[in-house]
Amino acid sequence: MDKIIIHGGKRLSGSLPISGAKNAALTLLPCALLTDEPLTLRNLPRLADIDGFQHLLNQFGVSTSIAGSRPEDFGRVMTLAATRITSTVAPYELVRKMRASILVLGPMLARMGEATVSLPGGCAIGNRPIDLHLKALEAFGARIELASGYVRAIAPDGGLPGGRYSFPVVSVGATENALMAAVLASGKSTLHNAAREPEIVDLCNLLVAMGAEIQGIGTSDLIIHGVPRLHGATYRVMSDRIEAGSYACAAAITGGDVFLKDAVIEEMEATVQALRDAGVHVEPRAGGIYVAADGPLRAVTLSTAPYPGFATDMQAQLMALLCRAEGASVLTETIFENRYMHVPELNRMGAHIETKGRTAIVHGVPRLTGADVMATDLRASMSLVIAGLAAEGETSVHRLYHLDRGYERLEEKLALIGADIERVGGD
Ligand code: UD1
Image 1 (cartoon, rainbow, N blue to C red):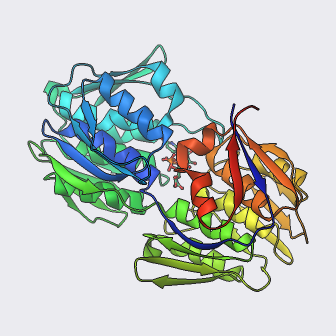
Image 2: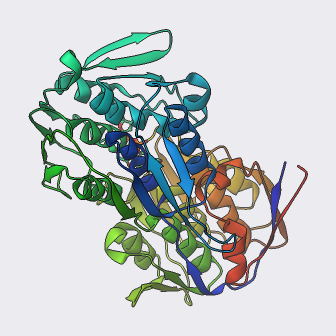
């Protein structure tokens, strides 16, 4: 298996392009199921998860084509056409590999009146149930059956009537599934305490471009007036705020500076605030964000929270940065119960991090040292890359499968700003 080798200690400086957002793309792709007309998505990141989702949609009879983009381009354009859906079942083999597959449940149910999806099961960062997805669909009139590891959702008389649901906790995935189910309902639906992440706004904007009627976009109260049919659209996937934040941490830990082209500061205010609190300079510039770290890094105390709070998807990368800050930082993970797998690996690189339940205390250290490391989830893997960029000597990051799921051509982008990084075969 491939690994990434980093020779740390180089000051990163320059400009790099931010790709389309993985987490937005994975909820925009299933919207193709909502119409028999073509949906064209621009700025789709080239990632293993996107390929996996395309494969899943192909299983349902959705045709997909990729417009001629050159290999050296970042991103690509995909046209999806669900002219005729030939299967309403998302099988275990595909769902097991990609949790986001659960996001076909709502749109498939809306379009076909039924959908069967394998239960995704647990994953490395915690239990990750889907009960709220199912409760929201039930509230909109679906009948839910669980059998043999599969969930089957059925709409009475072929169509959902719509309804009202109030989320007991904020869930990004369940909000997305509920929205995609409600847009074709025969009546009005309301969602309270809905997630407000920019990726949800991106989903709403696409649905509106396809003819949906949604009020309250960007707030936690959404009102959806169902329409009889949606039409095709061409839509550009938003920029990846988590990728942008990750590269900001990467540049900052080396005392460097970077222009993050296409990053949108309004969508990542909590990350920007955390970086500023840590002593990093961040400013919006035409077409992107400029980040520079030339003074000492400072300790930070924060908790992850649903948007507009600090994203759980940025916790590991910020922690890597704070390993080099002066003083003790206190990070609390409130979204997932098991999202500190990077801690023992960072400690193997010379970091000094203690965890107690959901809280991590990061004691800043004067230096990190290279090591062989691996992580069991995407953002944890990125935190090891960030630490490796600042570490003395050589760091080998193994198990690249996770990074390839979520960072488009990571080593190429880091090399653009001066990192000594290469991917080699063999593990
Ligand atoms: C979550 C993050 C999202 C991140 C993604 C990948 C939040 C609010 N969500 O989204 O930012 O991009 O992970 O790392 O930060 N829950 C239930 N029942 C459900 C669904 C969720 O109890 O049916 C709980 C989860 O266990 C979790 C919380 O709700 O504690 C939020 O989960 P949710 O937002 O649904 O997870 P993702 O959509 O995966």
